[in-house]
Image: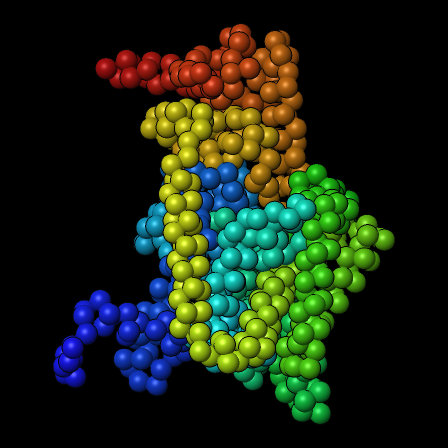
Length: 556
């Protein structure tokens, strides 16, 4: 049968023939239309990676935002949090607090935080691709890039455990349960600017590199050790390359001046009241509140950090003849050596600053370097096959990416559907709270960490959220001990504590879990009860209401 040479192919075959994901590139163009496409591409990558990674719900997840958002939301006017004792302690995160306050007041009290995290995801992906591409040409072809992105996303989202090593977590987390990317938007996410800084330096923009370091430290002062070692790395590399100290000193001075404002704030505002009080407060934080972050003997127990450091060591070997090696080797040595030193001397100050936090960028960069090497090695080892099968490989990688995004979306939906037995009680408080009320809640309860942010009601204390000024840390610990003693006591003792300890400090309501609801204190009057919790007003509130009613009748 003769065929018409001018006949048009079917619509479906035309679409398939035009769709070639092997042409995909993550590179900006040279004209405005290309730049707009680059922005759209960035937003798309941010959205897809963010959906695959997932976020915990703001305000009703028992995660770190219940600590990090408190002062910003209090200053922004959320509920009555401005009356909360902890919300009025000295703020250790002034830049992030300002961002939270601005977001709550002028963008959206919830969705703004999700938006910020999606942008963080985009910066993270682009920075990683750019860093790896400096040593392995993963951008040289669309198929190679998509393969790398698929594997990278797999190592960030698929929680496959091998001998208790979680691939989807431990290959991009640092040691000691510290990370750049985590369940929610929080200050540590600004560690992405450490990655941007590394890329800027590799592209020979050292001053932009230290600007990015300053952004990370400004939003999260815990990044000071990372900023210090990266700045020293940049200075050392520049000194070696230029055989001069002029530019290295300029970069070092610029870095110092840029972090000086936040460093000065932390230094002068959090000065020791006395050496004894400072030591006691540091001991409380390091050894009681966060030993899982601060004590190497605690976080080295499961062996996972050794695997992470092996991954970083392999990555350093793979880039040993590149500029990236000299940028990363000092941070790696510093993290390892200071950890070993701390294990020998057990110094609370070293434990408090946690120099091993440097691993939060070393581990994900190391993982992506290994992936970049593996992908480029595969394409170089079989050049004929990979070139001929490039469209197929690209489509296969795209299928992997979309599969991870779909499963992430399903997981994200399920996260927003989760419920527990605290919500009925918290909904009652959220809807009925009034100014001047303070709630005593079980301070050790993980499930009630979300109480403050969900209800907007002040609480007496909880274990999760602690201050940093030494006198305030000690006061927080004393409150915590009293709250724990109250919930662990019974009968006359608990009633005496309520009368002597909590009423004078403004407690107006007590939340009692089911096992404690049989208490018979004359100071308590039940206003709510379900199968799991009861809410009681205290004598202080009852007297205040009686006085208000008396005043009203007299005026009438």
